[in-house]
Amino acid sequence: MFQGVIELIRGMLTTGKEMVSKPVTYQYPDVKKPVPPRSRGRHELKRHANGLEKCIGCSLCAAACPADAIYVLPAENTDAERYSPGERYAARYEINLLRCIFCGYCEEACPTGAIVLEHDYELAYYDRRSAIITKKKLLVPPPNPDLTTPRAMPDPGNLYAAIPPVKGGIEPVNIVEMAKEKQ
Ligand code: SF4
Ligand code: SF4
Image 1: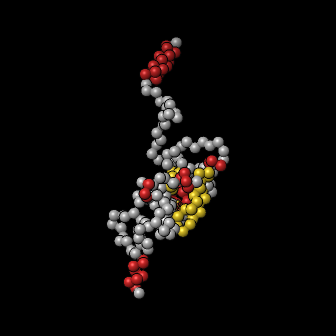
Image 2 (image 1 turned 120 degrees about the horizontal axis):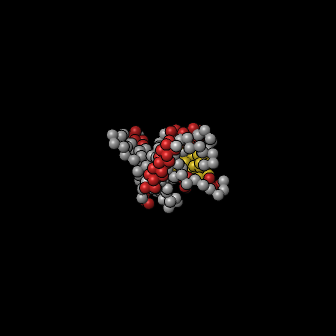
Image 3 (image 1 turned 45 degrees about the horizontal axis):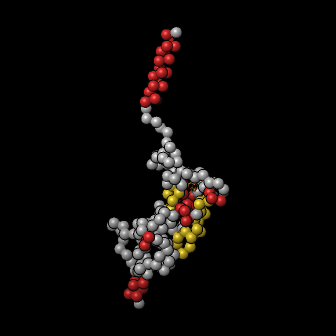
C-alpha cells in the first residue's frame, strides 16, 4: 500500500515535470530540426574560391561506392572552356539516391574534396527517376555570377592559372612562354 502511494507520487512528479518543460516538438516543415554536424545528407559538388569546379572527373568516387550509385562521364577542359583546374571535368555526374546508403566512401575517396555529403535530409520523391540527381542539382552555385563555369581562362597555357592561390604554394608556370624560351 505504502509502496503504491510512493509510485503514484513519483508518476505525478514526472507528469508535472514534463508539463512545465520546454516542448521538443518541431513544427516541421516550417521549422527544421538542426542535425548533428557530422550527419550525412544529400551530396553536393563543391567549387573552388575562384568558381571553378573541384570535380576533375576522375571517377574515384564511383569506384569506391559500394552501392554502384555514382555515374561520372569525364571530358577534357580547354583554356577557352574551362570547368575545373587540371585536364578533365565531369561532363555528367549522377547519383542514384535509391541506391545510396550514405556511407560517405565517395567523400573519403575524392582527391579534391569535390563531393561532400551535406545536411539536406528531405529526400522524398514521387517517382524513381527523380531520385537520380544530376550535376545540375549537385553543383553548388558560384561565389558570384562572373565566376561561373565554363569560362575562358585569361592566361592560356598557364598550368596554374585555374588553381586558386595557395599560401606557400608553387609559383605559376606558363608552358607557352617556357616553350618559346627553349627555342
Ligand atoms: S555515400 Fe556511399 S553509397 Fe552513397 S554514393 Fe557515396 S559511396 Fe555510394
Ligand atoms: S567527385 Fe571527386 S572522386 Fe568523384 S569524379 Fe569528381 S574529383 Fe573524382
